[in-house]
Length: 164
Length: 150
Image (cartoon, rainbow over all chains, first blue to last red; front, side, top):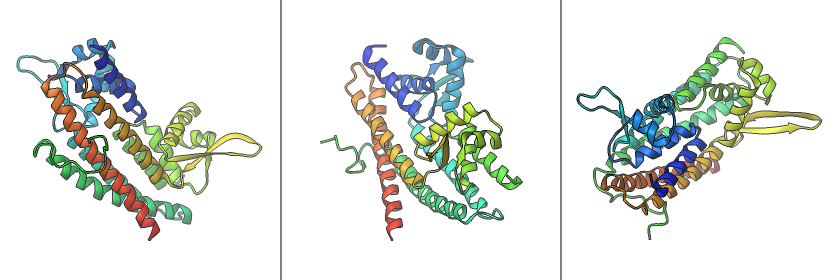
């Protein structure tokens, strides 16, 4: 890996660490981001200089979060991992599902007997917040489904700010 | 804690685990959500049946995410935690900051030499994806602030 690749992998590792994932998970994600082809666990362990056991655990975790996709090759029994064009939408769908579950859970707690008024007010607030989150995320997923399909034409304005 | 509250706390733990956070983080959050007051780390460790070291790490993490607030009391050296009053706004603002930083990493990666066409296309696509996510999160924040004013 040349220096700029290495730096990218490290920065992505730090980013995901700030998001609560182990750093190695973020480095796996960053490493695969720069690969044109799916990688085996051996290739990942080799490329990142960590044990195969460690990459195996974290690659599986990233797959559960929808951030990686498992792939296989004919006549080869090993697991391969890759970032796919569907990755962002898959990850958002999983997020949406967990937010819907969170909302149901909070909604259910509203009927807990003997709830303190302050707690009830908080639960109601979380319920409203999650209504907004679920609505927005549903719309976001629809827009993300268009990315890559319709080309890079429908970028939202005034967000990145560095395009001009 | 009664049985239903207990179940709520456990389910919250399982839910955060699905999101990639340790179960203890979700259990702390769930417990504090049902508490009118604030709790010390000792109390959290005791009611949740986990070590104080573990609740300490996870409470800090939740505080950094903007979800919990930590306070001290005069003449008491312990830290007390409660759900942050503006937890949604705070955590969303932090997420937006993090997304901006990630978008920057992607943008800078464009200058990388020798990236294959597949990787270049992926970088462009993820940049666009992140612009959509940022727009959506910013919109959520505006909607929440707007609702509160009205």
